[in-house]
Amino acid sequence: MKNIPILMSATLLLSSLAVYAEDDVLIKQTFKKYAVKGTMIVSSHDGSQQYVYNKKRSEQEFLPASTFKLLNTLIGLKEGVISENTVFTWDGKDRGWNMWNKDQTLQSALAYSCVWCYQQIAQKVGNSKYLYHFDKVNYGNKKTGPNVQRFWLDGNLRVTAWQQIDLLKKIYDEKLPYPKKDIKTLKRIMVVEKSPNYTLYGKTGWANNAIQQVGWFVGFVETKTGPWFFAMNIEMNDIKQASVRKAITKEVLLSKKIL
Image 1 (tube, rainbow, N blue to C red):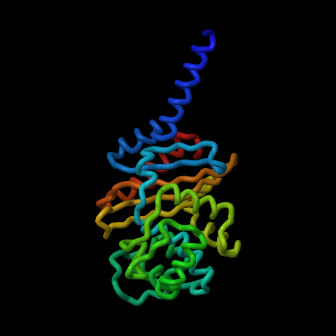
Image 2: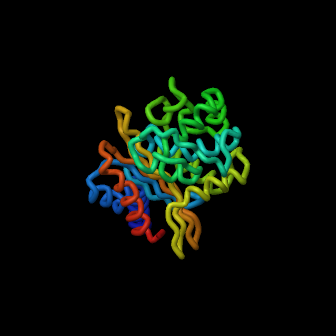
Image 3: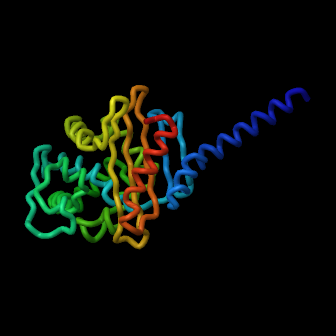
C-alpha cells in the first residue's frame, strides 16, 4: 500500500508530460497572442527533447509552397540545371514585387523566394525526374500534379510538419543522396540570421493560390550546445500575416532558451 502514492505520482507525471509534449502551453500562448491558427514542432537533434503545439495539425498534409525550394535546390544542382554560381536572367516582365524584377543569384532566389527562378528549374528538371527524387528521398506524399512549374504551390504535393523536420535533419547531417558540396551550398544560402551565439537557417512559404491557404517557416538553429529544428505553419489568408511566421518562431525559440 505504501507504493500506491508513488505509483499515482508517477502516473500523473507521465500524463502531464504527454499533454505537455502534444500541446505545449508556451507555444499555444504565443499562437494565441498573434491570433492565428497553426502548429509548431521544435526538436533537438536526437529528438529526445520535443515541443509540439497542435499535434493533430502537425500530422496533417499541406502544400509545401516555397519551403519546397530547399529540396528543389538540391534536385536542380544534382540534375545539373543550376550551379552555385548560376545567375537567373530577368526577362523584363513585372513579377509584382521589386525584388523579383531583376537578375537573381541562387542565394537571392532562395532568400527572396523567387517563384520564376524556381519555375525555370522545374521546367528543366521535368516531372519524371521529380517523381524519381521524391521516391529516393521519401519526400511528402511523393506527388506532383498537372503543372510541373506549380505543383508545390497549388498542385498535388503535400507534406506534414513532421516530414519537414525529417528533411531538415537530413540536410543538417548531410545525409541525403546528393553531393555534400551541394548540401553545403544549400545550407550556406539558407542562413537567415547570425549572432555570436547562434546561426538561424530557414525558409518561409505561402500557398496563397490554394483552397486551403497555408504559411510556413521551417529551419534549424545552430547553437553552442547543439542544433535545434523547427517547423511551423499557420492558416494564412493575407500577406499582412507574413511576418507572423518568423515572429512566432523567434519568440518560441527565445522562450525555450534556444536563441
